[in-house]
Length: 273
Image 1 (cartoon, rainbow, N blue to C red):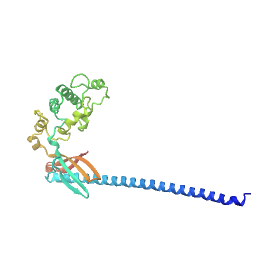
Image 2: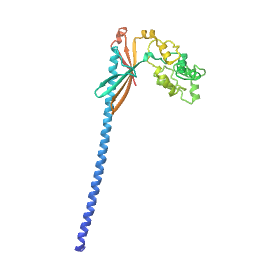
Image 3: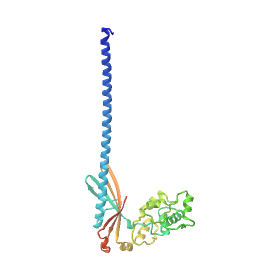
Image 4: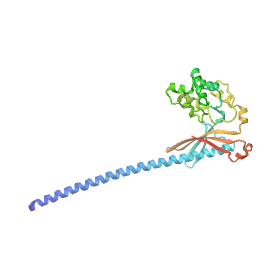
């Protein structure tokens, strides 16, 4: 049995140990509280960013739909360098449009036109000739290549899976799938091409991309087309918080009386990008 003299020391030791446990527990609780507060702040910040991005996206898409009715009424949206501006709630939207009918349809022009366009954007003549042949191969339903031999041989030679589509290009991006096309060449071609061009196409004879485009879609072609096709690009921004870019190809029926059964479909969004 411990002596009376040792009991105060044992009590003091127990109290000291209990104090250490309490202080340690308080420290852990404070650390957990700090971590929870920091996590909550990050989650709130991410939620606010997601909300702002969703608001910008909705406003941008709404602006494109509004732009379609501006075009239907004969209004103008401005060019990339000088866009039309509008405000939707807290979102500032800049809207520009380019005429798809003023571009070259990659499915409608000949190999010679393709070669001229490729040379005009800086591709050397020999490579331009090869690429023009590969483009012709893609959009024709034959096993034989326009450049000689079988289409599949070129893919095997390049070590690529055979994927000649035997159908028209459904998008400008699809042109990038032919064997010798590169992202750089496709980027140079992109401003001059559109798969949404309508109407007859005459082979252009210009020596520059601008000359090709003008010759390809002359005044007679525009007069014969019923529809107006525009690519509308909208950039929506909540300054300092969110930014969203969306584009759409819009067809406006210029003469609804020509096809009464389609008169109700005056505005059609062909694709979203």
